[in-house]
Image (cartoon, rainbow, N blue to C red; front, side, top):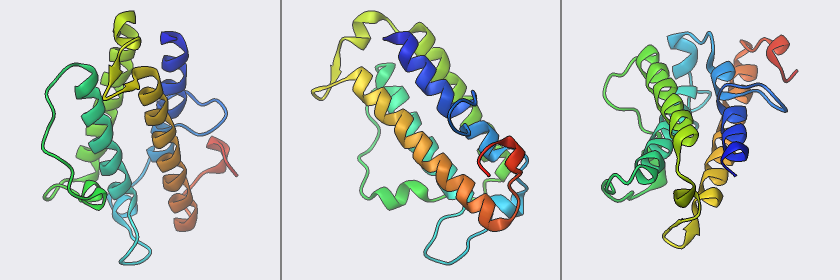
Length: 157
């Protein structure tokens, strides 16, 4: 089970397999490209990365047994960027967090994988996190294509 979850996580983070992983999707973005919005109602790539940071950090903390943070009032708030964060800082934060997830999955105890969080088995939760990461990575790729800055030789033409 652990190896399956680790393989799924890596395929959404840094190992190209059936689709482009997160690291490749954000590679080489400029500050301007990361923060560009096509319209006021939409999200920038930076907003999508912030959203992934929010939820991945929250569930990694839960996996590690770190007590819950404050309640989420509205999912829309999870896309909001903190202060005057730069793209470089956001990118580094996301990569550190995803590496921490990878390390946690490499070392997670089998008894944890057989436990539940609020009635949901951890393998189901981790699987959903992987799907969530893949979904938003696809949105990032779509935005890059719309901006005209995606190199299709990295995958997805």
